Image 1 (cartoon, rainbow, N blue to C red):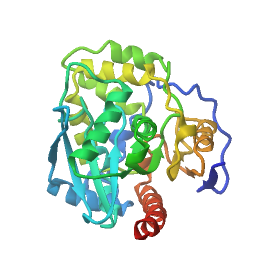
Image 2 (image 1 turned 90 degrees about the vertical axis):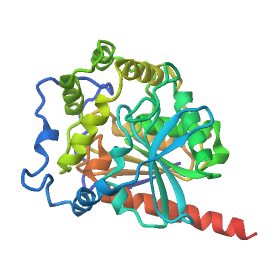
Image 3 (image 1 turned 135 degrees about the vertical axis):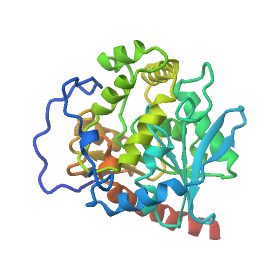
Length: 329
């Protein structure tokens, strides 16, 4: 039975949701409006101020996996810290995690990667099934010399993380699933149709419409939005299509087999994932913890990076408390 922790004082009545991703063509573009013109961000969020000043200094490394694929990544934290692998969602890149990185303590040895086909990562002609992304994650852990890691996944990145937990349970210390669907199987709506109609070069208008599907409920730096657009434009149409097809055709990972410490995070303004679905996901994972963030949408990490950082730190402390006595025996 999952423990339920709610960050809300009173939950509003849940809207009726189909659970599918659809384009809302006349939706206000909150992405373009969510920053101050003079600073490039709204100063209410101090973590994002730090990000805006430090992002340009990041050293992007490249890992060559055993299968020959090259993945860019950024690394921070002490070598002796708890290893954490960050997996972004569909069409994102390692840049997605930039609001979180400056908020993490040095006790977290963090790796944020760009997955195959995304950003500057290698773009093979095939290999965009769920299991391909899962195997890449494990091969990356191998490439940086780690035995195990906490895996944090946002959206479809959490879907990948759950597959890692099933296929390679001995490589995981814990899981954090952020706005991650219980199942993507057969989720095919106008979102799928729009992606299937893409041609190279991908139209910038499509990228803007794709971004507008995900409203923001907090400020983000202009530089983050610009980087997101740039990274998305690097994805060929075939990768958009093959990745979405691979995610929606895969059997959903059986969460009942997951046994590592797990936190399931959901924003109560997420238009794509119902609370009931997220509670079901948490309930399926023995001993997991469900956390609801008030006022956050599907892009939970952008809306509430400080809360994500706090919950991730708490998870790593729980894991450390367990593994240290075991290592001393």
